[in-house]
Image 1: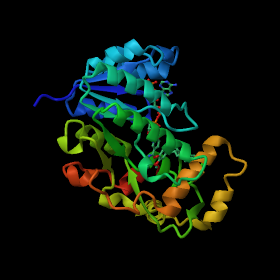
Image 2: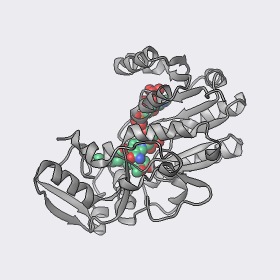
Image 3: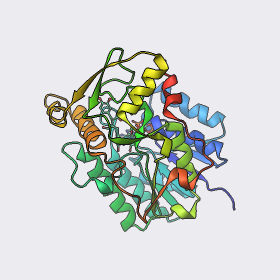
Image 4: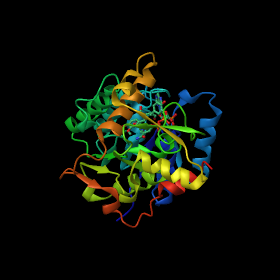
Length: 312
Ligand code: NDP
Ligand code: GO6
């Protein structure tokens, strides 16, 4: 079977750039949307040029030009959108509705992967405000996809290690604390942590896998199902230094939202569901889902002690 041609929308972004690399590495003819709106953003342009150097095709297109999106998606079999969903970065998940319209009109796309890559939004109907906006918006995109009968795969990537491991799960920083660490409750809730390149590898594996048609891929490789306490212990072992531990009760943690800006409040809400409710691990995967490491046992996923070595 010939390999699918892939278009990545949002390719210069944090997870998108890794998805472009994984698509090329797995031998797919890879297209990346080049938006005129990047203007004088030299960093984005350089990323695009490096993709081109590695064999990707750049296609010009804009979300404010429907025709350009239809023409772009007509060139490929698979579309992967990695539009930003992070509130302290440029954020616009609902712009994907325009991409859904273009895919619907083009009519040729065999698989669409919308920008999800986190907590499964379908399980978050009771999420706290204002963090629930993430799940409400992602569910609106799902509804449009399913109503248009576009074949899809949803990727529930759980916790990106860059946002949740390097900082020992502390908010407001991306590097490990030096002396003291705050534990969420007893710090014993099970969480799934993933290296971003592994997320990209698993994502690309699904695109011409018939087992993943109209299903959700949950990334829960067993050795990366860890508690916050276990992450802290791995860091302490690596650095041979014990950190002073403080416990934050659920009540105090939620109260900390007060006075934060919107992005901070969204973050607190998400962290609450992950570290107190255990929303990533407190359910069994049903018939509409598959677990990534079971489906693709050949992938040698990165363990979190290895990931943490980057921060030493
Ligand atoms: P980024 O913030 O890196 O942005 C990705 C891309 O979004 C950008 O590169 C840009 O594309 C595109 N974009 C942003 N604003 C606009 C706009 N106004 N119009 C058109 N395109 C725009 O995204 P992330 O990689 O951080 O997030 C991707 C997904 O991953 C989201 O769904 C997010 O919720 C999820 N996520 C999950 C995390 C987890 O721990 N599970 C952590 C972080 C994100 P271009 O390249 O064309 O410029
Ligand atoms: C990541 C964050 C980190 C917020 C998800 C504020 C969607 C998801 C695990 O990307 O708001 O410091 O699932 O001070 O489905 C952001 C968001 C986390 C960063 C959550 C995310 C995770 C989005 C912060 C902070 C490290």
